[in-house]
Length: 182
Image 1: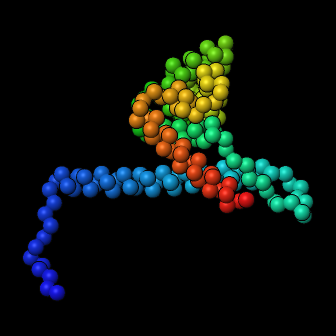
Image 2: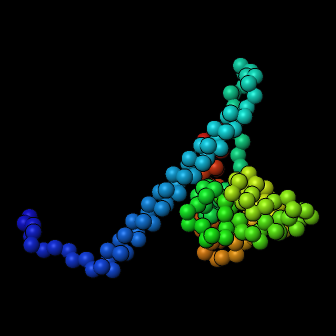
Image 3: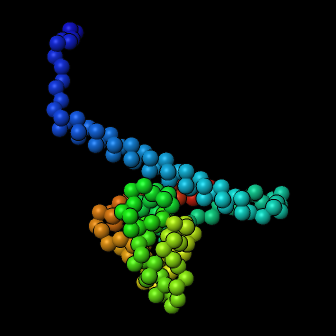
């Protein structure tokens, strides 16, 4: 079989841009899955640290607990908003923290509570951001509906789809862990 080395594939600039965007998309997916794995390992290791010091010989050293659907959706929202970084570089300047909380969100939390518990500075504190998320969700979404939780946080259609994709990925991973640990 003779190979002709004089023939070369010619790519236009458009082809190269498309290939770069496809590669970037693949790396984004890989980084997301790696981040999910790291965060799940952090959650599991935290649970292991919180077990009691007393061990019985006939019981395992730890018992895994799993996240509820509502906790998984909060985790997916956190990942979508900031990749769990309390000071993301790509913030719009008005939103801050792991949940990218806006000043209006803080006002709504304080209105629901009936007093000024949270300040704008609290948005950068991951625990306070989590508390504010729960205040709004418990008030407007007491049934803890996963889809409603996403729409309450951000009404964008693309945003909803991306968060739900992450949620489904996390849910699948958790189901694999449950099956594996039976």
